Length: 412
Image 1 (cartoon, rainbow, N blue to C red):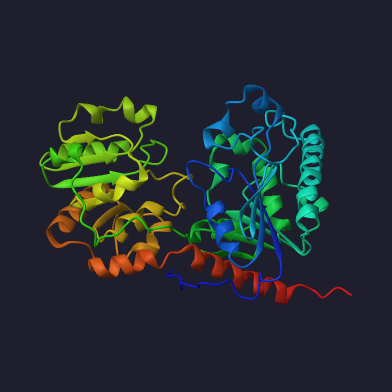
Image 2 (image 1 turned 30 degrees about the vertical axis):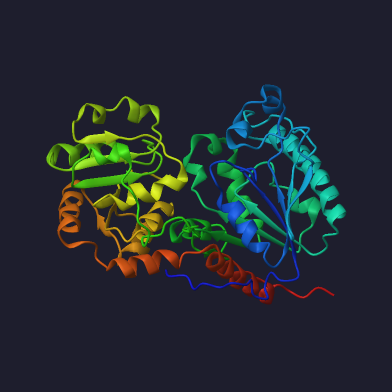
């Protein structure tokens, strides 16, 4: 699906005040779809971005998951911080009970409802301070502590956003297997960032729509001249590159090993932080596999520019099969030929990326990419990648909201 770029939010969301809740703080160091959507919405609407509240265990430790994401509230942080003309980041003043390890059932539901009520009361204070009136509640996959928020905030519309198949992750299965489908059912709209996730959501709510994935490609400029990084200069070609987190949950170690052993003349260059499975893998013993480690974001275009082919050797599992691969847009934005494992979410890239459904095909298509370039011209690839903007994604969301509004019964 190619998104049409729009610089303004159409009539659907105009006139509403939007409250955003989710799993990641606004100042997350790893980036966030939710934050990017909030910033785009704030070009036309007033937006309150609610940071995840601390629970008692995390507050006690002060260095748990919130610290990892950069979201710990301190005395230097006001509870309500204005980010731009129409956007505020809110740091809830409430500490929730730590209940996620409780067995699923009545006790959990009772305590979770209480947590939701206390969070809602804190959010309501910010809403009143800002003078928000007509509320749209946008929930980025916060299926537990935001499950009941609509009962207290009473939004005119509730949107649930799905950008990962979280129920494939063990942490979310205990309560999420029951609560996420129920939350999707009571939402006015479910928006997803891939066709696969939209299809999963449609099993619970027919008003489910793929709004695509935005991507900030401002730093990826193929017209620039990039000096070759020092640690890449010593790697002779052809260079087959991957740039991103090296996680065995998402990447196929056996496929990488197969390619490296079958084609010892190729140099596999892996740029990014490794998990334990990668650090202990046989890949580190292979002379044509090069681990260059994590790099600052501003240095990544230089690495991409000096690769011959870029790859996405994705693992096929319930977590990955429907994920939108943002890195593919970054690869294509640099005009590079790309080879990737075929998944349902990758179907939209089929005219611009070689898609392999087995290891032998991965090698054959990489050979073809080295010889002939990609299935589309570099200019076509660049244009396609740059059509995937946050403006386009939010415009698709707005069109879906307009349809929901038109179908809602009029109350007297």
